Length: 344
Ligand SMILES: NC(=O)c1ccc[n+]([C@@H]2O[C@H](COP(=O)([O-])OP(=O)(O)OC[C@H]3O[C@@H](n4cnc5c(N)ncnc54)[C@H](OP(=O)(O)O)[C@@H]3O)[C@@H](O)[C@H]2O)c1
Image 1 (tube, rainbow, N blue to C red):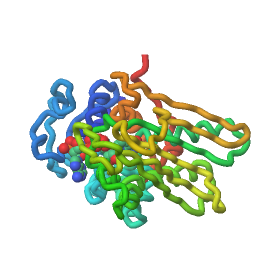
Image 2: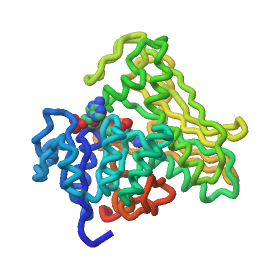
Image 3: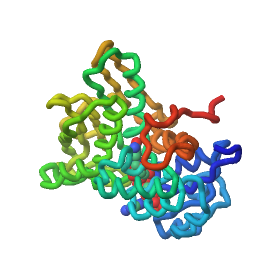
Image 4: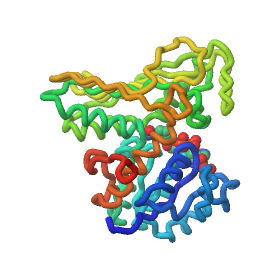
């Protein structure tokens, strides 16, 4: 990396994007030089203003070519759903991408699209990296925890959180929440929306040099016992308002990597699974290791500020990704990502 600031284009200003811009505006190594707006009403507005801070002098646009024409070092890619064609264009133009949007290893995109993105990055001489809090940070925390073990039989990363305040209605709807509990598509919708967790299983398996035979998904839903009004979404009585699911990597039929998740919207459901209000990392091995991570929301909710904790593992990775070899890069192939230059 050179001594000058890295020039970053922010792709959308939703929950994660807003937190990313707030952090980058204060970051001594990063400079927000452009912003993509998905919503027509955001086009022409200042990116800083859209993110609840003062104007940055950077106007949001929906013009992809204009943003590529800025020749930024990196795009911080946080749309609700990724656009493979657009990502391919950005990478082929020689612009690194750090994304929180449905990618860790690219496996869930399918081999064709993963290959397209990897090829585009190699052609452009740049890298594509996916992160977030989970998948992302929590998986890396678990991998680091195995470092004290002589042998490992199982690694589990549990996310168990109250999502009542996470106002991303489309994400929850695409996950099947809000549908009648017996809807025929509900399980396949949850599997599709959370398929990026299979990327995390793959990434962890590669880091641990273990050959996974199979990646499996299991899910069950909690049913609203009364109407749930969330402000951003309403869930009727009898509809899904929580889910408990798990992506597992199996060796010889035995789960070696397990990524269980409990997400609950509202407080009236059955079953009413108890929450850990955070992340529980368990390594079964010699020795076994157990860690509990709580991220305390500044407003005192029993849940993290998901925007910030999702954005920061991506923001902090930008300098390392800009220095990484071309292609899709995985967390264990980068230097340790920490809150460099913002501590003190
Ligand atoms: N790995 C993790 O830990 C983790 C955790 C949370 C979220 N995520 C992922 O991070 C990404 C951003 O999450 P978020 O909570 O910030 O989402 P969000 O606020 O619901 O949406 C982000 C932005 O996406 C744009 N958008 C809206 N509808 C869209 C559509 N149909 N297709 C494409 N873009 C659309 C909008 O951009 P404008 O603002 O320009 O209108 C919106 O503000 C998502 O892909 C989410 O799955 C990852």
